[in-house]
Length: 142
Image (tube, helix red, strand yellow):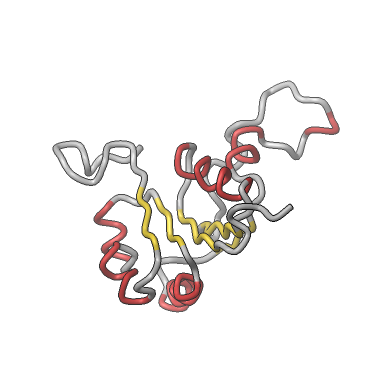
């Protein structure tokens, strides 16, 4: 059986739970989801491991693994020109770009909707932040 999103490629720059979980659902539906992480790894790694865990589950981080299932990942330094170039090359051929970077960080890295559309004018740009992109709390992380 063909998965509904089998021919869809998603580039994802996010962390914590909501946005990565959305990417995991897209992967469940067959999308090729590529998670872009900092060189140090997603800060969510190792945060969801219970204190008492059986030996055979020591390498499993429940929160991270569940919200990032089915994805491939790449570690990139967005602060460097070459790192950002890697991301933009991925975006150029993708169908969806999703992130939960705050608006000022999207703009600083050239990953805001306007900049992304210049790289790939048919891409869907999805932003999921804790407090939205407008309003008095839009600058807050979460």
